[in-house]
Length: 286
Image (cartoon, rainbow, N blue to C red; front, side, top):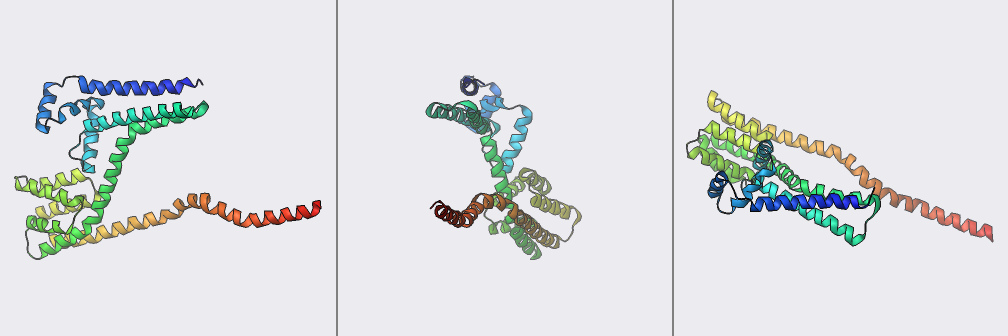
């Protein structure tokens, strides 16, 4: 394989990225894009042009992930913009490594990893934000359910109980519940606001909570008892997940032990033996 092939590929990546970047910056926006930019503010006038990076199906998928990550100010255009910047940056970095260290032969293929990392880096960060946010909500739900059940058992209406129970939580769940209460205040029905909350966050425990609240509102069940049971189930599921993680720890520890502990043990065991054998050979030679 010619050593110039990876350089050509990286150059194509770089040229395509730069070309698309300036295409999005210089091409005049359509009337529809201007109207959207006016709604979002002047700063969104150019960034919206990067929506062309994804088709409609990809835009819907990214919009859903952005909601789950809590990145409500971002859009698929922002993800496309950062993808292009990361792609350009990693291509430049790969070319710098080739020039600075004179990499040749099969090692040149390693340089192609950097543009791939650059392309997927914004998506990795978004997926990591989704994972961390759902984990934070999972930890907050049991305490919130306890407070909500106690408040309802004291005779408080559901909306007022939700408003007062928010004070016991501080993470992303608090902001989502505040947004849900704001939806109710502007005239949206409680079931619609709770359904939108479940779809927006897409977290298992929160889906069960919203379903229980909607069902209790329709059937008139004992909401306080239902919430107590949900809190207990949420804690049980959290404990089960923790036990599953703990059960996988020995598997994760095998590789560090093999790389770090075993070589040290071999040195401690065989070094005295090797020294003893060396002394024996010295006596034999004499």
